[in-house]
Amino acid sequence: MKRQHVRGFTLIELLVVIAIVGILIGLLLPAVQAVRESARRMKCQNNLKQFGLALHSYHDTYNQFPAAYVRTNHAFWSAAILPYVEQNNVYQTLDFNQSASWRILGNPNAVALQTRLDLFQCPSAINRQGLDDYLVDRVPSNYLACASGLLTREAGPDPGPQKLMYHQDIDGFIFDQSRTRIRDMLDGTTHTIAVSEAVNLPEIQENDFWGLNASVDHWPIGSASFGSNEVSEVVGSSGVPINISLDRTTDWYIDERELCFSSRHRGGVQAVLVDGHVKFFAETIDPQVWSALGTRSNGEVIPDSL
Image 1 (cartoon, rainbow, N blue to C red):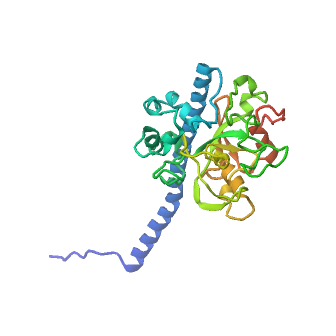
Image 2 (image 1 turned 90 degrees about the vertical axis):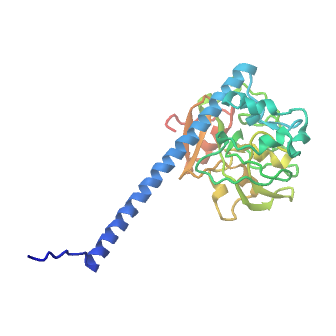
Image 3 (image 1 turned 180 degrees about the vertical axis):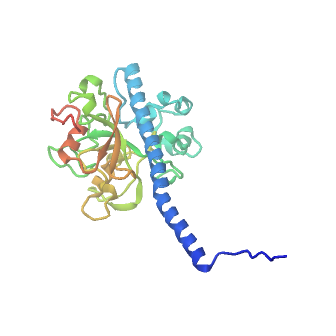
């Protein structure tokens, strides 16, 4: 009988196979990551689309858009639209009469702030439930309403005739105690930003124009404490360039980082315009055009090809 010889892999052949597999994995991983990011970006786009629809439903009901925030009860625009984004059960638990109730553990308002709602989370973002000045495990948000296309300061000593972000009747979509309507969007609803993205970077801490410690954080629904230097919790400005909050240099004030629209999507941010359509804006956009998109009635000319 002839003896059969079974030939195994030589060391060189094994190394070649390993190298080929490594190359294939190296080629596939970026493609897989790109597909995953594309899915995350689409989910974020859907969140913004829901905001646009909810804001219009609110307008249909009350003949105005919600205020960005209400100082008497510390409620945000994101609380006002809860019934229109299938979160009426959360909305019905809220007490809009007591601003202090947001900070009492176990109170329905505090529970709402600690409840993670996917609508306010961009899947590409890195969010951790955190601690604000009064409430543990508060859930951050990745979306800010656009209150201005011009302003870059949140608060601080009186700058003279220039307004700050906490003032009423500023130039954007909604703001402090605002009662804006579609008819107020004189620049056109297709050319006015309603809501855009913002990253949370609580590790960035600097003194603001009041000399108070501030960090880049944003929150939905309402707030336990709400002063003039905290409006960036809920609104942003396109007067600040896109993604500067991610810039690790010291070229920007903390106010500018807090008011900045930014995202983890490569190269820019998504925003829903007042007419309800969602668009991606590259961080290389002309600063004057980006600024113009944040104002509602300044009469700027915005290219149709944008």
